[in-house]
Length: 512
Ligand code: SIN
Image 1: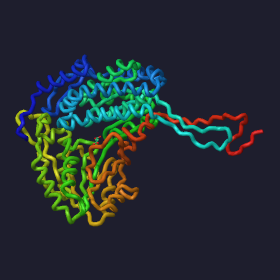
Image 2: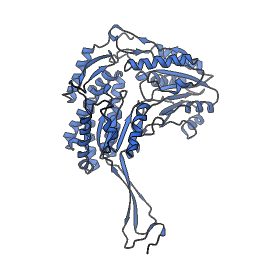
Image 3: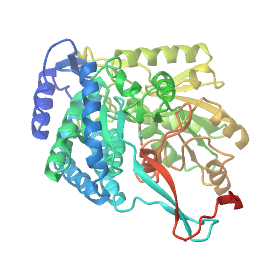
Image 4: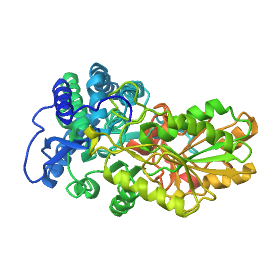
């Protein structure tokens, strides 16, 4: 444990209330059948009780947003952009408050918590620009005096389901873009991070009022998965964008498909880096440590597998071991800390279980894997990030364990490295450390990584909002954030316009 003293639960509760107050959130504490505890992984203890949402409140949120949709749809896109501009200003003003809440609820260190809020501000900037650039295409018609167009239109109510590990950025990737596209949004965050959601939602409500937008275009529901069933099953929600586990995806995707709804899914990752003999090992060591140990291994993009050439494996593992043993693990509010706590006991149990299975498969734990205890953190789960050398890619490695475990495998030929890399069910993020241009090009070509994100000489985590974010295979295939991901929040219409005085039919058909 780092030398720093853990903040007490009472301090955390007070700090959370102050941040919520500053963001304009109130009336959230409560009791009743749907209430649940807000908790901080920093001490592993409850902060206070939050009034949750019932199933009928979820239905009401869908009705409210559905009713607000037509007016918002008919608002010009650049005017919709003005709302997002105001929201971005408020996020900037309250960056510190929001980052505090992210640290309190997730245990992210200050710099990463601020980074997550910055990501919301960045996506607002992008969405404001997008609001003046939503576009369609004009295509060549085969008929004289005819015009063939592709136009894009808002879908309606978008359900956004987010996970604990990124309590606000993925919501903003979805919401800023969906609102600019003219959709309305109902947000169901993880109940583990309801306070961050309350603060973000209060700021968006303020932006909506300041911009004179229809009040009902956004609703937050703090419901359990069971109570939020209408978000998944209602035909009034044409699109559900969900971030979470593969299990979540397997549960909701068939239900949404059964009603012909659309999904944007960002599910599990089992992200790997290949390290080639030509790699800059200083750079690789830094990039790997951030991606594998940072955020206590709780990013979807966390690096979980290292596929390293056998000639440099010992040296790279020795360098990583040295860095891992010097990582400051402890209170995420302390400036020295680099690794905060796991979210809860379940995450720790999953980590222990994976390590035991890896050892049973012949793995050797080179460093880490132990829980660190401090008197004031009796219920917090602070773990040493682990590196495990494995003889082969066994089943435990092919599964995602949401904890800081880095499995090391070795390769001899580049073909073998690519095959090992792609031989997992998930397909979110990937990277290669090499200075050989042929390898870099091959890795990012269609014969290389099969993931949605394939990086060169950086780690697997820490994406920028300008690109589309998402992955293949059991990661779900969805894309959020930048590039043309906005198309996922709109429906496409093909328009054929006849401005001639004749009525020629396509394909030369003659109908009398
Ligand atoms: C995540 O969604 O878990 C992480 C995003 C990132 O690392 O860029």
